[in-house]
Length: 437
Figure 1 (cartoon, rainbow, N blue to C red):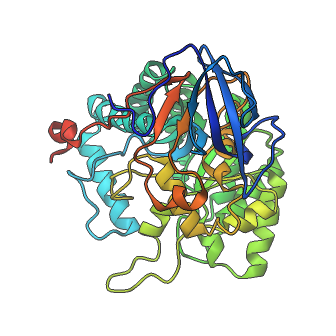
Figure 2 (figure 1 turned 180 degrees about the horizontal axis):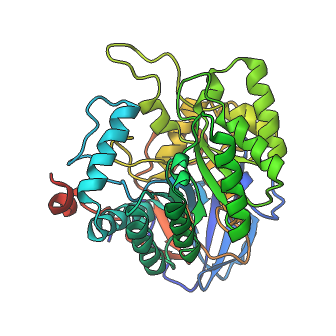
């Protein structure tokens, strides 16, 4: 095992001294802040953070690792992924990079190949990558048309238990809402989700049945005590306004559970007044919005022989300014919806800063892959650095924003309960007998 830019602590009690921490991730610490960064000493004992003090103020009798102003982040939260689709690109590529090409390719691969063994192998590979990169919380959407819903949720439940001490996992049923018309299927899906401790999800589309679909979905969620996480308006069609319809349905039904909307791309294509009215409704309804900057730039506004005219992402800043809970996430990994990616939140963050202009200033930007997504999925104990929490931390040699954002930070060190983990990434060759070379 290699330890990159620092040596691992060889003591039960030690201090990470002169650590530069994104202040937005700190809990109950009063220290000077410059450009959203604070310099502190982090005191760790028996795998737990016992104190966070101003730089130089930690106990002198503790073993000490001087980070020389290197950054320390909490482990990451990645709350919109597709672990069941991951890494199928070698055997089922997207023929043209389009959204419809992705739908058709995934459908063909799912129907031909998604046995329990296949899903488990690829899901495990993805989780090993995410863990090595420093992620401790993942929410995944699972394709849930019959009979796949039972196969994938069973695999997920087994995987969640096996990974419980490394990555906290949540799962959402992903299916077209028009499938709710089959009452037998929908009842079985709800039973599967409830038994697996999952969430109701789905893909919303404009149509005459949308109001019925949303009312049925929220009534069912109330009946079974389930939260909701939807794929919303993943299109450049200005007429796609299902985000507005979802907000109206939440308010109309008095739904008090958590509601999350991913993508919401068409919002950025609408005129200012239309978009502002929807943003206000989303805020009133308490809906959280997740932007998927890498995947949406890949798919949206892609036409043969034509340079894209927009970035494909939602009105992230306007939503946040209105008080909407917002975050960014990985989305797809090496599948027809996104040919690239490695479930690395550092990559997601770096790209989000560029695509969404989260910089100038960068003072609170770190929240979008740490405490904001953790809070959205009901895990406020994750994505933060606080006394009394496990020492689940990611250490970087980068000292300031420009250094952090200019390199992929491949020399990072990940601590879990104060111990350095092996950051070796799984070799793609391991999947050759599953998806081909």
